[in-house]
Length: 396
Image (tube, rainbow, N blue to C red; front, side, top):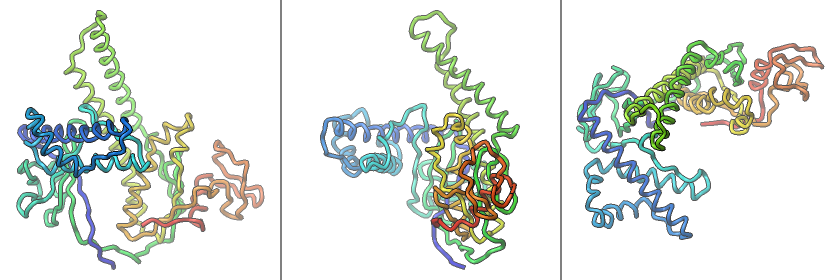
């Protein structure tokens, strides 16, 4: 057993009061304003050809001194938590540095109706961040009710909390510094290979087959509901534009548009949560078997998305979410995760004799070997080849 000290986060939904909602909204609004101000200043310097870059530390000093003196009407910036504002500046600094290094594109501005910035609050002393069974004490907010009882550990020491808003609901992510035990060496089964696909979400080399959740009746029903809400939202936007242009049409108030936007967000969140819940349970069943190792493919998702016939199905499968969650669970359980080479022909290779069938097409769902006569399911054959793959890289 190997004991390691690391951080672990627990995300729960909160039930804030009206006064607490006002504080959260005001703090997020200030963080959004400061974030956009940092991006705008550096964007103007970049467009003017100036190589000067205002770092987060320099921006913080300029904001507290020069900007506060030149803009006395912006004193509401300093009425919220200073730690949350500094975290917004740090996030903007990281996003802009990633752009300068060529890692990511130019950072987008935070919109009021888009995904809001988070509210970060660290632990300052032993009494300002406490967790109990049904409530939590958060700095600047006080005690808040928690919807999920007993999920967040009460005895562990919380380092910080990050509050986010999604579809009109408020969530808190508590970060704990806890000493965990890595159960390395506990092996209950042999290594397995996992082949991800669209027809079946995951096919395991031991014979298990996990169907695609997007083809289930529950997911299809939620998808239809999302389409209906999006059509209603689109009609309201069109009516509002026609009203501004002076075209005689039925009135659509801005408040009704905001209500419909919230309905779209809730429908989308429910569909996303359904998919993530299925992936979480699938990974839990795979990892609970404690295999010696797990082998998956290094899928080129961005290249697969260029296929206009399959791009939507690939996006809905969320292969990247599956991989990131599987990596985290393998590190937690002490399981070796192997990433097969991207150009490894797992689908075209016969799992019995090793013959490579170069003319195998995507529509061929059954693999028929011309050398040994093996007839086997295409995905299951790929999972068997992944299990015995020799070219791989390990994660964790």
